[in-house]
Length: 341
Image (cartoon, rainbow, N blue to C red; front, side, top):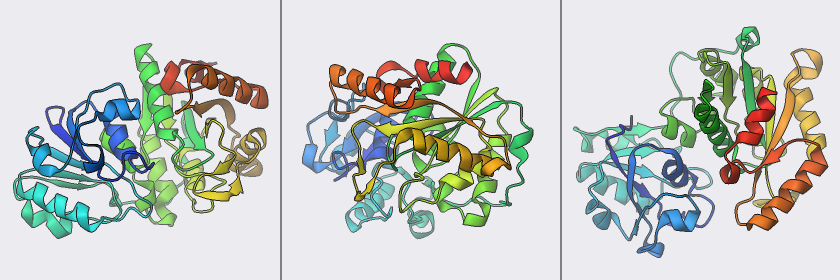
């Protein structure tokens, strides 16, 4: 719904540096429309690109009034807090933004179009996490495809599965290789303009929704954005992805130095080779379906300097015996080569 001519303002109040601003950062890194500013009173006057390491200028302003001086046309709710609920402060900003003529992109679980649509007769409200109509259960149709279907799996929720997939797709396009990307979460959908919001779909139809997106792709290489994690106590997203996509290949996404889950410190991150074996067997249904091959590890080395990142990559390479890279640092070529081998 976002046109290339739109001007985007990101509502990031309280979410820039607490790990919940992934929507805003994804838009800043990947969306082709112009991002004119981000709103966060705690960091007003700074640059979001410099703070986040995204190589794109984006001034941070204190409030919506200051943002309106940048002449935005769209306000994107750039945070993704646990539970995905709209806070009273953000609700006030949304209402004021609509009255000022802005359209709204809402990636939260709380739908806004029904509540505030009457305030925006000449604009739109995109509730990204809305279940599509006409869903059916999965049929295993992806097994009949002759392309390579790559599912990105993670050792945690926000570990970089979408980012790794988009970086690999960017590298494939640079080389002239046709490559599709199936977005399965709100951030990927906003960036690409299509996909399926897996965490908003009833469980019976989740695999079918993924299957529908996968089978309509015609590219010889299709990358499927992962959600959740097999080893996360709050996640149930991996199995619908496996059954809907019937992947031929897997890429494991991990954060360097992460031995326990940050929000669940009592959960130890499993031995990575053991986790890849589990993922392959689970995807294959213990022999019911074709077994995928884990081809590479996408390692998130954010916060490390170049030397530390190189050492972390070498360690994971030795631990797993797989090609390893941080696609944000090096561009996804190592992973793409592994997928094409």
